[in-house]
Image (cartoon, one colour):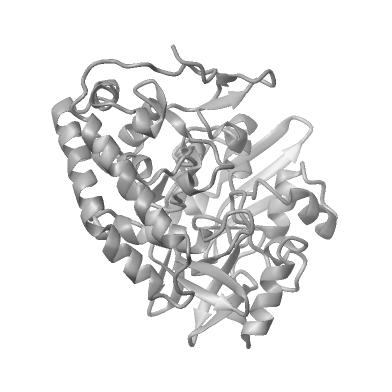
Length: 431
């Protein structure tokens, strides 16, 4: 049996036996007025849930890379989802901790120098999320190297013994030059055009730049750091991380539809938040398209789950302009109006999306045009603010700004085109 806790309260237990994997809510948790479900796919009830619902939700809490290294360090098979979370799951996305509740007091290892932080960053490929370090137990989803941290008296600190992290530290990526400034620019621009986005700044540790993103699933109270529950749309749709993209390669140079479409994402938000929340998701989709964030898959949108199961769409996060990196595909994670490449999207494609998800086509075009104008207007301000952050600017930052403006100008110009042009089928060929 592996127990799940919210702070020091037992929420549920997961057991695995010869008949499968089962999750049961704790009766005391069910009796609480403020109780929330661990997932919108598993509402509060006394009857247990089975593996087909539990395992996808669990798998989405684990990183998608370095599981082999983590497994070797912890002597747990990388395929053993429950075993891994029992060891590294005391600080995950959302509000729940695996295995043990948090300690009553907050405990940290404060990183005393930039040299120490630089070494920690350099060691992350060999020791992902500091797996195996005494008192450290954290799991962050995704493919990029990252670390859950807190800021204590102005210094980076590593949470210990179930203490929640408050920030995610994302080091620079060698194969993606200026990734730190790139993502900081996109998140800052989102805020400047009026969208909810994760707050971020940059930092330097010796020769390493890093992005420091404030976690929207944490809050500071008089009693200390508190967790806020959330789940990404892959979890809300009950799919595994491998299915987060709409299309998957066939192995023969083509693609097949295997994951959720934009229609599926809008449907999940309509069902689990509200019909009105579709407008928030529309803004997020528009912004990702304009910024050239081709990796905006199902795990890059999330729901915040509050007391008694109230939900809202989470702020934007993980936004990167991929257009400056020739090694990254130009194909969007989900097609829009049947198109895969942002520069090919016409006004009729936005109208098609609106009709498919039950929004007003005219208002949708107006919103796209509005965000295009705001983005072009505020891009210079976003660039200047990022350059003034601790890690400074980068020779590629101006190119990021230019590519985002160019993308917005192209899409804005093509809004007037309401006739279907050439499209790409799921195999990437022109139809």
